[in-house]
Length: 340
Image (cartoon, rainbow, N blue to C red; front, side, top):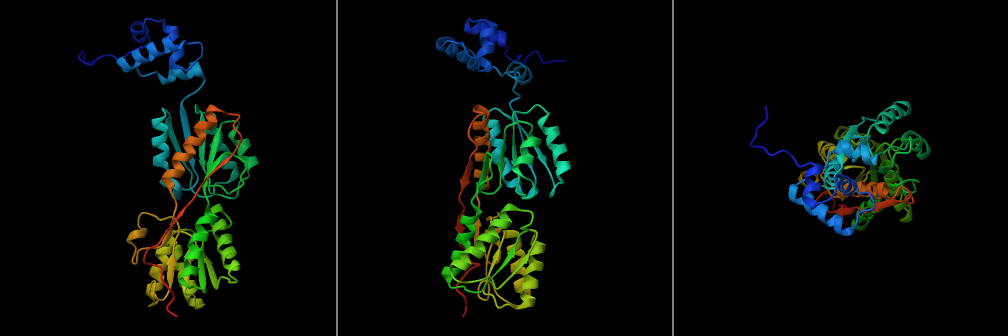
């Protein structure tokens, strides 16, 4: 039973009657079709605003061949931090927002099946938050079946539309900060360089900056970006006793675990060992001591990725390009001059 006090939503016919034009003319305006005079366009838009007319998405998709929906695929749940800004940008521009999360390094066959399901649904474009190194651009193009897409998190030089943070720039800021403090014996806890672009670039840049100063890593271990793996890797480094005075960690979670391991061994941060992280997670300023780290703007990553996809939808022949965002060094109390 309906409430007679609740007004019915406005229809195309209501808009046409108020504007003094035909139903077909209103349909052309709503669906952004050509051959509508500026004067008529103004009258129709004024009537739409006055009646608060909301287009029927299903009907509109039949007329335009577009669904006004985008699908975001996140290949690692660690990257969910950029999703809110993507969703906000999509809704602000009148797009439905759909999300699929995949856990870990999905096999190529399984990935192909998942992307087939997505690309054969009613969507206009896809954003792929793809931090892996195990899939080529050619494979991805084949899987996407001609659907416009933008990648977030790939490496520099990837030959498709993409948005990323310059990992080399951020790593250089962190290492040069340690060097400026006077550290010459630096160890590292890396992420998985076999699977992740970011981990590979951060390690390569770390070695490059040290080499520029005629230095080498005194020791290194690998973690999986978790707090526990940072704790375990730091314990292994301390058991080797390489005498390092500074520790570069490939993300904040591993830095947090490393600080705990250092303290458990009776050492102090930063008096005995300085620690620097990467990402500037929400907890970084509340660590003990507060963590020096590299801030990546995940909100900007999400917003820029949607804007690039929107540009691609408006101009499918747009030349592929990358948008590069830069990170920032955030100095807190986990780093200091070496004691000796």
